[in-house]
Amino acid sequence: MEKQVENKKNERRLTKKGKETRARIIAAAAQLMFERGVSGTSVEDVQNEAKVSASQLYHYFKEKRELVKAVIVYQTEQVLNAQEPFLSHLDSMEALKSWRDAIVQLQIERQCQGGCPIGSLASELSDTEPEARTELAAGFMKWEQSIRNGLQTMHARGELQAEAKPDDLALALLTALQGGLLLTQVYKETRPLKAGLDAMLAHIGTFTI
Amino acid sequence: MEKQVENKKNERRLTKKGKETRARIIAAAAQLMFERGVSGTSVEDVQNEAKVSASQLYHYFKEKRELVKAVIVYQTEQVLNAQEPFLSHLDSMEALKSWRDAIVQLQIERQCQGGCPIGSLASELSDTEPEARTELAAGFMKWEQSIRNGLQTMHARGELQAEAKPDDLALALLTALQGGLLLTQVYKETRPLKAGLDAMLAHIGTFTI
DNA sequence: ATTTTTTTGGATTGTCAACTCCATTTTTTT
DNA sequence: AAAAAAATGGAGTTGACAATCCAAAAAAAT
Image (cartoon, rainbow over the protein chains, first blue to last red):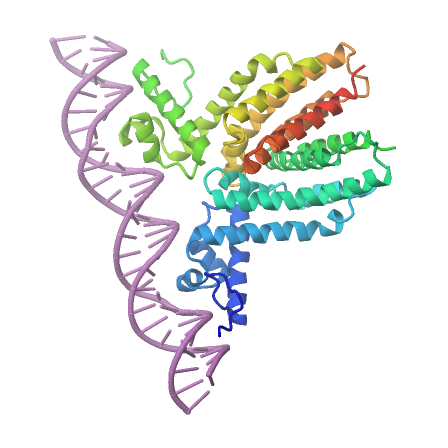
C-alpha cells in the first residue's frame, strides 16, 4: 500500500531544508523580476541572489518558466497579504480612502519604481505564456473579489443606492489602480495614481446615501 | 559656408532609399515588439521581418536600444494618429462615448491581445531604460493633453460645472484606459476595459450641466 | 567623369544565458 | 547500521543573440 496520499505526479517530497531552499529561490527570483522584469533576470542572477548552485535551482524547478509560475503565485500572495488589513474591510468610504492613502504612500516610498508586482508580470507575460496568463488572471480575480466584497457589504447595508453595481465598481476601481500604478511608474510622480483612484472613489461616492 | 542647416551631431544624411529602409526596419520592429515585447524580439527577428541584413540595421541604428527608442516615437505617433479623429473632438459626452466604443471595438478585433502599444513598452522599459522612460512619458503626456483639450473646451463652454477639474479628469480617464487595457489583456475579455471607461465617463457625466 | 558618400551583403566574433551531467554530501527511511 | 532518497557543488555543453568587420554595389556630389 502506498504511503503517499494522492500525490500529484510531479510533486516530489521535500525535506524541511528543501522547502527552505525552494522558498529562498522563489523570493530571490520575485525580487529580481520585480526590479528588472522576467527576461531581464537570468537564472544565474537568481542563483547568486539566493546563494544556490545551478543544480539546486534545477532540482526544484524543471525550467525557468516553472520558476516564473511559482513567482506569480508568490507575488499574488504577497500583494494580497500586504493589503489584507485593508482588503478585508473595504466597506465604507473612509476605509476606501485609507486604502487609497496607503497605496499612494507605498509608491512614494518606492519612489514610483516598479509599478504593480502582478501588473508588470501580466504585461510582460500575458500574450506569450498562456499558463502564466491564467495564473495572473486568477490573481487579479482574487484581488477584484476582495474589493467587491466590501462594496457588496455596503450595498447590502443600504449604504449604496440600489442602482449601484458593486461588481462593476470593483472592477473599475481595480483598473484605475492598475492604470494609475503604470502611469505613476512612467511619470515618476504619484499624480496619475491619485487622479485615477480619487476619481473612482468620487464616482463610488455618488452612490452613497 | 555649411549647407547642412543645424544638423544635430548624429544625424547623417539619408537618401530616399535610405529613409525607406529605415522606416521599414522601425515598422517591423514595432510590430514584433508589440506582439512579443522588446526582449522577446531579437535584432535578427527584425532583420528577417524587414528583409534587411545585419549591416543595414546597424547602419541605421547604433544599437538595439536606439532602435527601441525609434519604435517608441513611432508607436506614439501611430496611436495618436489612429485616434486623431476622436482625440481632436472629445468635447461632448457623445464624443467621449464614441471614443469609448471605438477603443472597445478595437480590442475585440484584436481578440484582447497586446494591450496598449505604448503602455506595454512603458511597463517593460520604464524602470531600466531612463531615456526610453522619458520618451514614453512624453508620449503619454501628448495623449493626456488631447483628452484634456476636449474637457477644457466643455468646461469653457459651461457644459461642465465650475468645480470640475478637467486636468484631473483627463488624467484619470487615461489611467482607467490603461488599466482597462491591461486587465482586458489578462482576462481575455473586454469587461475590465468597459467597466473602467464607463465608470470614468459616468463620473465625468456627473459634472455636466 | 570621377570622387565621395551612402547603402548593402554576409560571414564572423565574443558573450551570455539556459540547461545538463556526474560526483559527493546530507538526510530520511527501514 | 545499512540502504534509499534528497540535496548540493560546480564544471561543461549548446545555442542564441548583439554587435563587428571587410568588401562591394549603388547613389549623390563635384
